Image 1 (cartoon, rainbow, N blue to C red):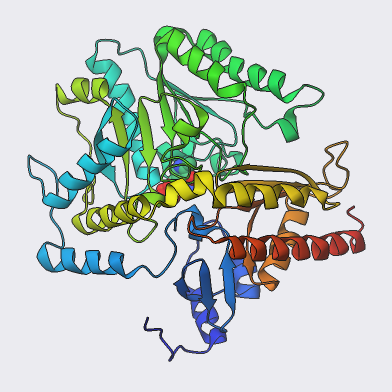
Image 2: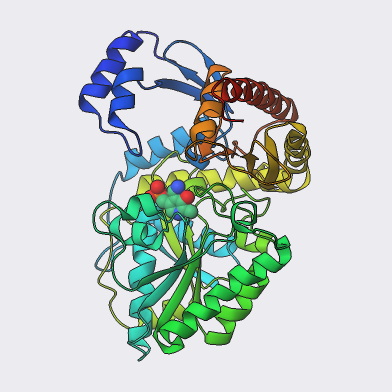
Length: 461
Ligand code: PMP
């Protein structure tokens, strides 16, 4: 593969970056002081930066490069589609072949009864669609009072005003007038941090029953939907206790409330099945998809909706859509990505082979003195860092201080892991091999050692 060899010096790129490029979720002062890491190319699970370091990407970009970097088939699919029809819209009774084919392919992959797709370019946009769609659905069905949507604290559903309001990130709500009205949050099923003396099973039930309490408080006739990630991702890979989802499903069924499963991270093999809803045994009415749909090679997302919702919405006009809803190049690339995921048996491998191997190696990290629990589903996992495992204690510093130390040690050891507070996250490309998993775990252990030494020096343990 051709790599650019004539890059300007890193320091020059960093200075230009800090001077002109505003980054998402990045402190401006820190960026100017340290400079961004500049990634220049990728192959499989490996990235190269502008200094020539080879990094093992245990985050699959941003949880999305499921088939790994450098797949020429996707490049060719994009190029062919660009030559033939680089753009056309899907508004006003027009369509094109890539959008038709991708919608049909998705209908065949998604759980039974979810056979209709509304395209977007991202997870945020798709969740904005969902918010408007569920409210419109109930209006069209003659129940206009059903406008409330229930979500969870520490959920992540996107950064636009609608999706950021659906999310439960307090730091985001504090900026820019969120949440918008009609969105209500219940507590998350994070046993490690919030479970106290309860067993995980009792705690899972308690957290699920908060949904029922919230529905009753608002009035069941006013509630449109509940939205949740099958496994919370950006909130720290919080795998709920086994008791949680069956109870949530019972409650939404009892009150006839729509269930939106946000599959933006969990979808397309991440949890060892095509969708996290299958792994967690839930029956959503809508699934939000993005990221792994194209393995990040093109920006594309969407809402996969039930036949009943499609029927009702299709009975009128839904005044909603994005210029790039069903973008032909993105659809062509997504189709090729789905072909590779399927024909190369990547999802099956995550379920039966490399997933269980990663789970086994990852679980062994709990032998490290600073790791309290290791939670993993398929290939999304997290480690809770703690100075005292038995007490599930926090560090004597702001949440995230030790997590950041650890992430920096990972970077120094050519491993990309992310931290959410004091949880360390992995979500590698689904094509990661056993030897690469060994490298991941060895580098993680070394980084944990170094972070612990630093935390001890700083008196944080
Ligand atoms: N939902 C979930 C569960 C996500 O993890 C994300 C992104 N991390 C989004 C929605 C938003 O997707 P996007 O960044 O593509 O807008």
